[in-house]
Image (cartoon, rainbow, N blue to C red; front, side, top):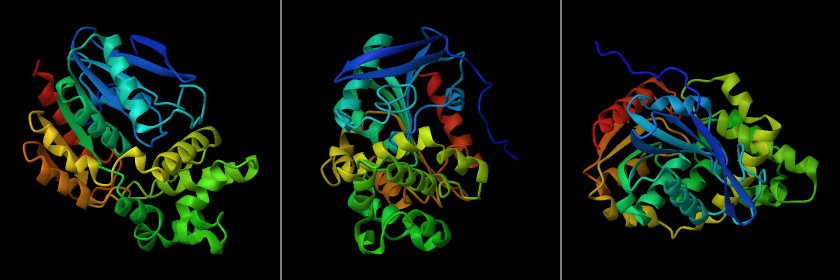
Length: 318
């Protein structure tokens, strides 16, 4: 029986810093692994989720030099929960600024969930800068994907948690929940803003694992995290991530020369499998791993196993 791969041991950054990217934003970044080894960048989810110490452990530290960063407005980046000058294309430009700091002509790009969206946007904009691409929980921010999670779809699988999600919104406004949440998350009432942020964030935290994990879900409801996560995520999704409808799949041909791996759980609720399958068809050169008995989270055993195997496999490509 094959043993499932798990995270590498805990590791501390060998360097940290803050990069002033303009528009009032300052990006926190850290570097882990072996200086001068294979360069890689990790793109976190949300948007608005931030990085965690566990994310450092997805790469063999002896063979990788990994940069991780908190995207605009979240984690240790400042200003906290800020929506101004915070779009997909600002983040794509930030990734290029960070690549310049590393001094790499190319680097491996690893992104999960929203991180997969950003990774695709970056790779399709700068394909010559991407040595390999690892995507988990593929999401392309189409209207169908947004409706599935925030209007009707996942609501049918989780009616109990859906009830808590819609609770802050009067029935008259529930025909467009994203707009109703946007009004509250950007409004002047701090009490209503925080209540909306907690409900929005907890909905995601309680539906991304196949099996319930109360402690995991509770972390999404923590005030500081929830405010950035909900405000930024709703801001991006309200604007369709500043992408043309279907753009990332339309332009997937630009990935044709990039070695890649796609990992997706069969029962991924936020990011329906149909999208990952469509990307697999549009980018057949990439390895595709459909994980049975798995939801969305990178920490689900079958998903984590394939992600570690992918970073190990690509480590030897220089």
